Picture 1 (tube, rainbow, N blue to C red):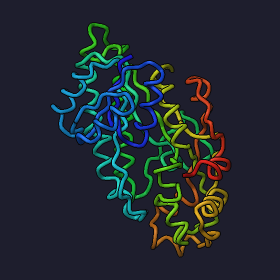
Picture 2: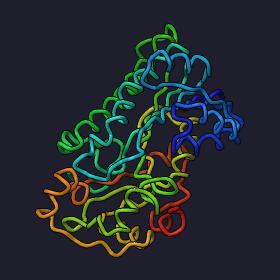
Picture 3: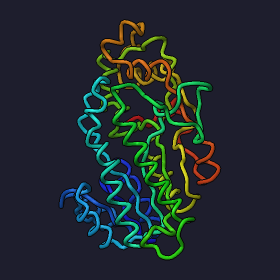
Amino acid sequence: MRIFIAGGTGAVGLRMVPLLVAGGHEVYGSTRHDAGRNTLAGMGATGIVMDPLDARSVQDAVAEAEPEVVVHQLTALSGISGNLKRWDQDFAMTNRLRTEATDHLLAAARATGVRRFVAQSFGGGWTYERTGGWVKDESTRLIADPGKEARGALAAIRHLEDAVAISTSSIHRSTSSTSDGAGLEGLVLRYGNFYGPGNAASRDGAIGELLRKGKMPVVGGGTGVWSFVHIDDVGAATVAAVERGAPGIYNIVDDEPAPVNQWMPLLAEQVGGRNPMSLPAWLARPLIGEFGVALMTSVRGSSNAKAKRELGWTPSYASWREGFRTGIG
């Protein structure tokens, strides 16, 4: 197949490209700069310079690739401050990529006759409702209000997921031509919290640095549940979604959602930090905000049962316990 990866030189794109090339696919990847074209060429793919926030640039890039599948991996996660009270500010560009760039890519996909559209979303914990069981599947509703610090980020995630779902539903509304959306299969991948080389939960990443310096405490008992996934497993799962699986939403996480009070001490140990201190929620709230307290105390993890069953994907690191010890980077 001919496959176009928007964000081909990003964290996930770089994992996907070698797998897709090895599988015999013809791969194109977008990059912001000419240097990225060389990176992609070195992996056997063709790089196309594209501005994802410019509709014409996106249209031209997708038209040049003439893909059967478009994969949306556009984010802007470098330089995240780690200040939970500034979540929306830190994710401002990523929010634009999940809204404006998503719309541009979908329009270009329809115009070019793309068959399949795979998009990155998030399912590591904080987006789901914080009631009932501690592990959620894809049928669980997203939370109505995540806290004022992350309302913009949630709105962007909703926009992306709704836009892809609407494109998929057009299969049933129209059969006249691909140009009006008929035949476009949309898959949304709700990734867990990344760990591994080059990511926040690694020795050199933002979370790793905070833990190593003793600046990330366990708040309010640490009962909030997070779901993790190794970056290599993210790449493999995304390739599976390119090649197979019905339209819909899939949680891409490992087998063991975990409360903060379990995963944080182990990660601190692996990055060379001390056992994290504990803070009561009332004392931490002025420092990390309501959203930060929720991340530590009430967020829910995700189940990967659907992805394993319908995509035929199994994480090579079944648990963060093993992954933190041997694959942290």
